[in-house]
Image 1 (cartoon, rainbow, N blue to C red):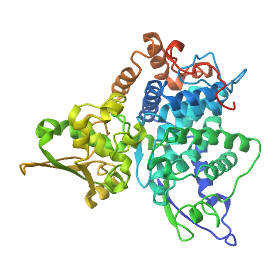
Image 2 (tube, rainbow, N blue to C red; image 1 turned 135 degrees about the vertical axis):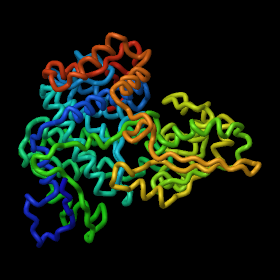
Image 3 (cartoon, rainbow, N blue to C red; image 1 turned 90 degrees about the horizontal axis):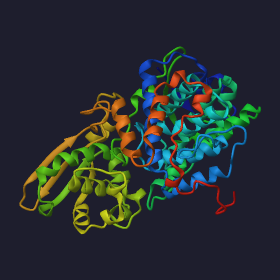
Image 4 (tube, rainbow, N blue to C red; image 1 turned 135 degrees about the horizontal axis):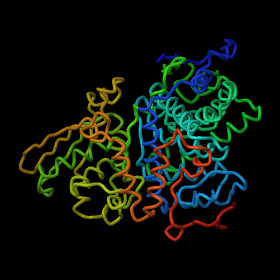
Length: 503
């Protein structure tokens, strides 16, 4: 890996195209290196993981609405499939990516990577797969495209902090998606370079989508990025250009969206001929909640019996990282995070709520743990309001440690009982993390798939999809068209085109 310095260049100080970071990203995308069996295996795991959470959310309203919009854009003779719908029905790729991206993101339950910024790299898969289906690409091409998307997304997240400037993290996702599509299609470095720049230019938005009363837009945001990425690549394939240089320009991203004219970032990228392995640094979720809560949910399960009677708890303080404290903890200053009437999207960004329920129940469920009646239970509210967070510099340092063997996303928990007894425990990483007590492997991804799709899909459909995806690199273009999970239409809402909106 090589670190690349990115800074602002005044217009009078010409920056050659080959030295621009978007060009260097495009060079990575066109570097046709071998893909190891280890990386291939993880790509398959993540396609299974995405399908799991997408099917589980198929009848949630944001997903149903996104699907109904896609149904208004049939693909005619060619197109892409939509989660839940029959494989015989095809829709325009950008709208299929919109529907599928929303389904994948809705439950906040797929993979994650955290470094200088935040990301869900699995969000790269829906638009790349949709384009693969529409343009009839085979499994090897799809595999290469997804590996590129992960590689560039993860490395952008390592080097450039967006949330510091209250920018949403899809600004790293959209250019990575565009690059992944470029690799899938075997486009030139020039075309991918322009596509990356267009995608970045149109994908900056604020973090208000993850603040205060969190709405369904949190699920739509990465799907919107995917739709924008497909459209950007389409324009550039037709010969259109983009604002340039997009990162280093005098009036561009770093200068006016991020650290300003004196801003300097170092972003790692693989060198020519070097294997793309970033997907192996990412991690999925065992529990349907914000990633920083994963280890704390596991820790709550461990503490349940130690605490015993929750009525005797005086206070619970989570000593944790800057991010956990200020984004999902009491440091955020959001009263909604303590509100029993808050939306599911808000509750899954409240570690106080999550820790209280995990303590009481000793389990976590993607539906039951967020149910309104669960959130309003008086004993839960009482315990919930005794929980607070504080930033601990040691945990912040571990959160940002570049060494994956030292990086941690957990906390130390201090429980003070009414009689003065103090119970302490800590956990650095979730059990399912690669460095955790029981890292996720294929059987765990399949178990998650079975748990989330149970009573939604048929056994035959389950077996068909899992057999197909596990032979990814050998799939023909015709088989890639079948890489979708179908749900019996009588179990789905909004499975037919409607007239509720404009489309």
